[in-house]
Each structure stands twice: as structure tokens, then as C-alpha cells.
Image (cartoon, rainbow, N blue to C red; front, side, top):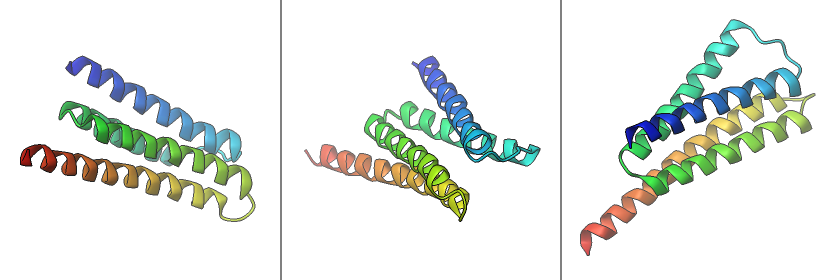
Length: 122
């Protein structure tokens, strides 16, 4: 079972790295420097490790809620990049990705905690 966690974490790392590069390089049209790649890699690895940890501890509902928050965050990132490119669209897009991802994680952990308490009390 551990191998599937590693595969899912790897897929999430690669896909989030690809989506961040796609958004910044091709939608915003910004040149990427080494610090961009370092920041994107750090975020992508954090996403992958969190996803693998949720699956390793069998918090499947939390994983799905976290993934949903990540997907919503990427949609909001691309929407902000496309709509508000002249203003603070780049900053708003990156912040919305971070906020939706963290909300997904926190809400997923709260749901899992509530389910654990309900299961324990039965």
C-alpha cells in the first residue's frame, strides 16, 4: 500500500509543479528564474508530502477534501492570472492558491477529527 501513496504523492508533485510553471510562464508571460523553480518545487513537495501523509494515516476523506481545495486553488490561480493581469492578478492568484490549499487541509482534518470522535463514541 505504501507504493501507491508514493505514486500519488509523485503525481501530485509533478502535476502541481507543471501547473505552476504553466501559469506563470505561459499565462502570465513572466520569465522564470531559479528562485521561481525553488519556490514551485518547495510548494509541490509540500503538497505531495501532505497528500502522502493523509493517505498513509488512512485519512481518505481528508485527502479528498485537501485535493478539492488544491484544485479550486489552481482554478482560482488561473482565473486571477487571466482576468487581473494588469493589476495584482499574479499576487492574488498565488495567494488564493495557498489559501484554498490550506483551507482544504484544515477542513479535511476537521472532518476527519469529527468522524473519529463520532466513531469513538459509538
